[in-house]
Structures are given as structure tokens and as C-alpha cells.
Image (cartoon, rainbow, N blue to C red):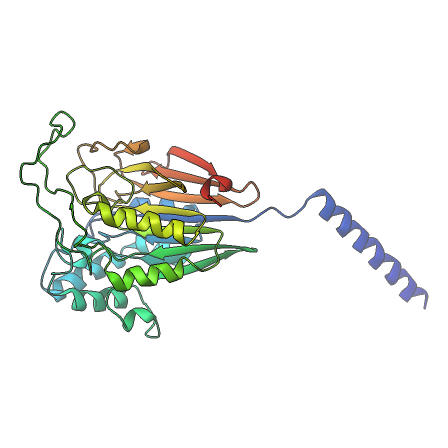
Length: 352
């Protein structure tokens, strides 16, 4: 009986100590980290992926040009994927976090290609296979590879929406000598914005799906677009070539009262942050990370740029501090240096 009494007193004392410790050191609020990048040659070393893995992200999003396929031969395309995915840098990243992916033109199949690429269904089958998408996944039952994914952090939810900007996209409109500011554009322009609404980036089925997934409950929504959403016209591939589709996206976010939308994008071989202002809507940020191995000689003009450009190889990182309700948008270069951080409060990412 005496021993039982001593045990009971010790148990009460331990519980009291635990309660006191919890008061003195409350559990830290969760932090969600999403790393992302694009544009990597399958036959080059990719130290950026090891650096991204070291950040211990909750997910890594490959935004496209994950390899440079550029072929109509599906054996060639598969072989290039296999060479890339056999890399120890890729394997280290895969072992450390959840891999999510969409595609851009070079891994879709051909430079600047859209819905007319003849091998798109064969290319899709390879994509789903190499990224180990379960056969029960809805992407097997419909055209395209668009999907969404939910991450949980305590009682918080992050929705990652992966768009397909290739399968349904109309051909870009060629630039044919229209008058432009030749001082701003010191390079040869390739494309010109559509002035009518008879062209599309996403296709009606994907637009209808997007409207539904934006109705899901989420604290932060990360929309992954292989090409830049937030930039102004620069003569290259971007949503700016389909301004009516760009406006449709902003109107859809507004109509669905979808708080917390941030875009991530790739394609251009440098990093930057663009900020889009639109009537009746909170600011829309687009964080571009493009340069796992690829580089470019210059950054194009972009009236919406607020950070960057970073021309060296790098990866992007979204870090949501749920305690402070702040989103940190970062770019970390191949030397492991944080090149910039753009911080916004969660309150800034809602209009209603």
C-alpha cells in the first residue's frame, strides 16, 4: 500500500511538471515548405535538387521542362526520363519528400507545342508512368494531366493545383511586325497577344474542373503553371499571349471567393516575383523558378516584377509560417545563398 501511495504521488508530480513545461514552452506553430523548380537537362548534374532536399520541404513541385525531350519518338522520350530519374540527386530528393509534377513544352514533347502535338497521349502515358501515378488516379480517365493535391499542417490545409498548359492550348499567335517599344525589346519577338476570345490556354473541361477545385476548403492555394502567369507581354510564351484567359483566371478566383492564391511558374531560365493588381481582388503573386540546370543571357522586360531576376541556377521555396500567418517567397541559388525573400501576410491574400 505504501509503495502504491509513493507511485501515485510521483505520478501527480510528473503530470504537474509536464503541465508547467507545456506552459513555459508551447508547441511551435507548424510551418509548411513547398520547394519548386523547372528546366533541367537530363544529362547534367543537378546539385540544386540536393539543396532543395536539405530544406526538408513537405513537397517538391516540378513545373515542367523537367527533361528536354523534343522528339516524336517515344522511346527517346522515355530514355531521357530514365536517365534523369536515375540521377542520385533526383533520388535523394525523391527519398526526402513528396514529388509533384506538371509539364511544359520540352517534356510534353516539342518546343512551344500545344494541343496539336500528335504524340500527346503517348507522352502522357510515359509521364504518368515515370512519376508513378497510381492507376486509380483520375488523370487516367480524362485528357491532360491537371490535378490537385492537399497538404495538411496541423489544422491548416495547403492546396496545390497543377495546371496543364499544353494539352489543350491553342497555337501561340506569331509576331508579324506589329508596332512595339523597340527600346524595351532589344531582342527578336516571337509571339503576339490574341485580341479575340476564340483561343484557349486550358480548354473548357479544365476550366470547369478548376472552378470546382477552387471551391474546396484551403488556407493557402498554390497554382502551378508551367509558363508565367503574372508577367507583362514580352514576346515569348506566357499567359500574356492569351490576355482574355489571364483575365478569366482572375475573374474565376474572384467569383469563387478563393482566398490565398499564389502562382508558381517556370520556363524562362531565371527567377523573379511578379505582382498582379486586379480590381476587386487581392494582389496575385507569381513566383518564377526556372533554372535547375538551364540559364539565359538576359531577363525580359516585366512591368510586374518586384523581385529578381536571379540568373544563376536555383530553386524556389514557399514557406508558410502559420503562427505569424506570413508567407515567405524565396529563391535559393546553386551556392546555397538565399537571393531574395518576399514576405506577405495572409491577410493580404484575401479580399472578403
